[in-house]
Length: 126
View 1 (cartoon, rainbow, N blue to C red):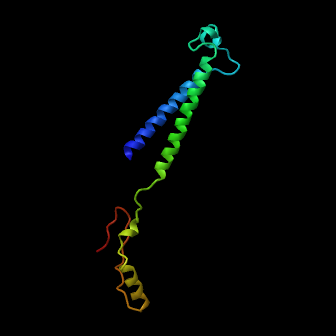
View 2: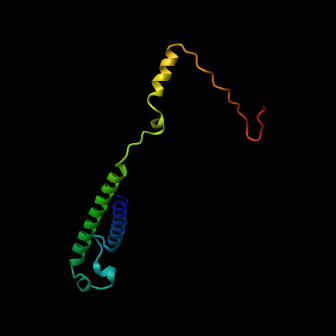
View 3: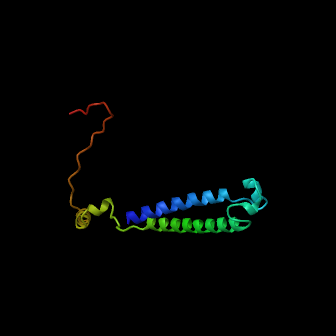
């Protein structure tokens, strides 16, 4: 389970970095490809219109991978395999009704010893 969660985290980080890089590589609608690379758009790496389709599709795929990884990590983070009873889970169930019946029947309980509180650095008188 931990290995699966770590794999999803690595995939999410890589897809996030890929989306950031691809968004920075893309040009705006008003920008010209020649202005970005210093020459005409027909002589670019992907051709006249190939880069817009390739970059936008790759960005969409990586954004989808990022979204799916985020949902998977949310599900795995909220999933609890064992339900803990907490601090009160260690108290035996039989002792609670016995104490309640003793106080209800009027039996006198032994008073607890007083607890002396002291400030730090002071001795408690004996």
